[in-house]
Length: 281
Ligand code: AMP
Image (cartoon, rainbow, N blue to C red; front, side):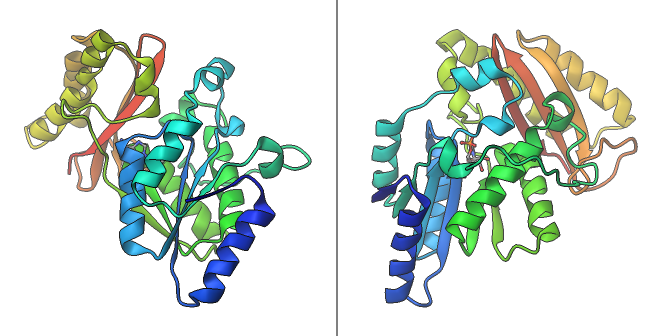
């Protein structure tokens, strides 16, 4: 696997590959590192669907609204590199902040038509502006044919799809399912910050989501359903930030039962903020 930190060199590697393989499909997996099986599944799927796969590792400061969260975010370059080699990733892009934002962070905003106002967007100011900005920049640098994203970040997938439509970016966005530990915890780089007993406590998230799926067809209003799930969740030890029942397309909380619905949760396990979701209809 080649590792490049500079845009010019990255582009040279990709264009040399394309010269020798003119019909090659270039796949791209953007990450913030501290890689786990969830990321590796994206790379492996990209490898199956594409000829050449680029992974980026960049802890993007503009999507963190909490500087403590940014400082604490796990960074693990050597281990990440070995993991990427184990799944035959072709090229790792490991840029500095200056490389991504020469001349500072731009201050344009994208209109997400409300997709960014709910759930993560409601609790993390400007988070999705930061996400979209860095992904757009990475897309411009790597110029892949396909980009792979995990549904662990369900709202992020909707934001990226919207951005790509709005900007007429010719890249296929491929969402892939959530990878979980054998106990059910959605894998996350932040799980490294949990001790063994917190990891057990965190299972209340997936238990609540599974409960939501099992109970969805029962009688009762959306409001009472949500209350029932909140009570279920609150029997555990986590601090709930939100539990929403939302439309899969608009991401807006629903008030009447309908099809195409997901349940999304964000909660604090000690100091660590975790998110997870499940499609319930
Ligand atoms: P991150 O490094 O957290 O920015 O994540 C990089 C990519 O990996 C994003 O598309 C995430 O949605 C995806 N991802 C992270 N965790 C998981 C998981 N447990 N299952 C599937 N995809 C994941």
